[in-house]
Amino acid sequence: MAFLNSILKNSSNHKTPFEHWELNQPLTDGQVQEIVNADIANPIEHNLNYDGTRAIDGGEGKFREGISDGGKALKFRCFVTKENSNQFPNLVEFIKELQNPSTYKKISEMINKDLSNSYVRVEVICDRKGFWLKPHCDIKEKLMSCLLFVNKHNEKEDLGTDFYDENLKLAKTVPYKDNYGYFFSSGPNTWHGMEKKEIVKERRCLQVNYVTFKTDWKVN
Image 1 (cartoon, rainbow, N blue to C red):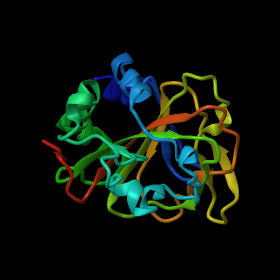
Image 2 (spheres, rainbow, N blue to C red):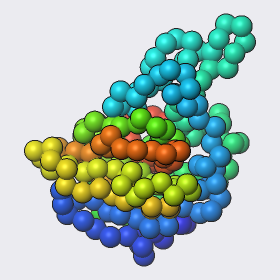
Image 3 (tube, helix red, strand yellow):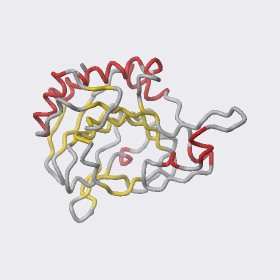
Image 4 (cartoon, one colour):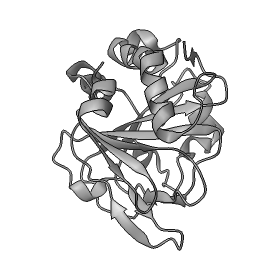
């Protein structure tokens, strides 16, 4: 129960520019390794440019559907589902922890939102050179937004998420430290993104949400 233990014993609460919590050591070694090993295509190698969103795989059909001569569909996003769960046994255990009432009830209490009828969504992320994310607020269907960093290549700590005040002025950057991260509840003026910065090799993360829409992982 590394994630819950991190919340209970190894987290810090921050009020500005909006309420959020930072987490230290939320992942097990096995979970970290699966994030490191996940096979995610590099958009730059396919002449695709980041556009300030995560919808990059909405590009040409051949990238989404595979090549007609038998080529494999390129995967720029990697959600953990029941279909690919055999590739991520440790992350499935992480999801089970999030489905557990002891975890979601604690988070529900912290963010003041009912998670008892929600679903868990987990995505392994690998941002490459040129990635940036325009300031945005998450959709209301994301009841809880969380990003957990895995930094195994000594990338700069300023590659973490940037938080903005209500005037969209940069207020703080959550450091991109290994096995570190944050969570908050979606709402107005929860502006966050990532300024254009230098990623030398890659920026790996685990994006974690409790959502209102259906996924393979309903809470228990």
